[in-house]
Image (cartoon, rainbow, N blue to C red; front, top):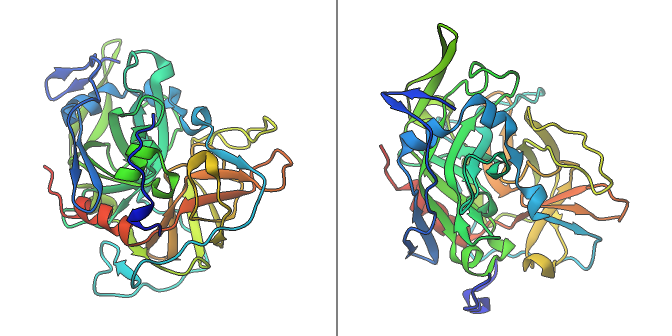
Length: 374
């Protein structure tokens, strides 16, 4: 990846019955103390209690949330001279949860991973009761010592517009938006953020070569809709740890730029021509071989990899999985959907790109992988 010498110190700019708490949740500030962790890692504690973050989200709010990447405009048009994403050390791997001492079999069928879901949050500094502040991205559970880590994009935890971390941040694995009730939306529960880990270069410079984040979530809650007279109440019960319920993908870094991967996510945004082929209500996937992408000054991109895929905004933060096996629904996280590309200029996205995962990616990951949460 890019050496540390490259860096410049230039700052860029519903009612809910829940364990006795009825939630009309007030706005909370994302401006809590941000501290630099080891190896240029920014560590930020969530600005609210886990129960409050869970209580904020009703089925109606989840359904009304819009993908934020569309507003950020994370896309590039055209295709220039390719960059050179390079390893900064030996290749490394962390096995998926449940595969620490075994090897998975193969399957011709593509089964969707239980680990992948939607990330929901509200925009900092905005009225959280205004539907315009309800946003989402994609993400995935990954391996960690305490089975509590979610991988997503940096711009899915930190707002490059307000330069603050998001509020009311939760992760729902295997999210399915089939109806207005809770049943089916969160089959494995809802998991609120406790700690965010990002690379300093994304937070300080909005450098999309570091557009990844690893989030420690608290133990989750199962939500059930109950009818009391003419009123529907949403009752939560403990669901346990994320990785115990859905497993977690492995992680790999410093690999070749030319590998075959599956990308999963929840696209919903339009192509540049205005066509919206996706709704964001269900998970989608692409498969292909990666290669180095061009530099893109707009996002400080110098070392992204990408492959042919027509997924649009909303898929941001979704995992790229190397050696994915449908039989186990597990593989190795080798990238994160970051930017959509219209490489031939026909107003249709035809590629997606990810930061190249190297030793600095592992530095950020290992802080999250060893952090305990309740």
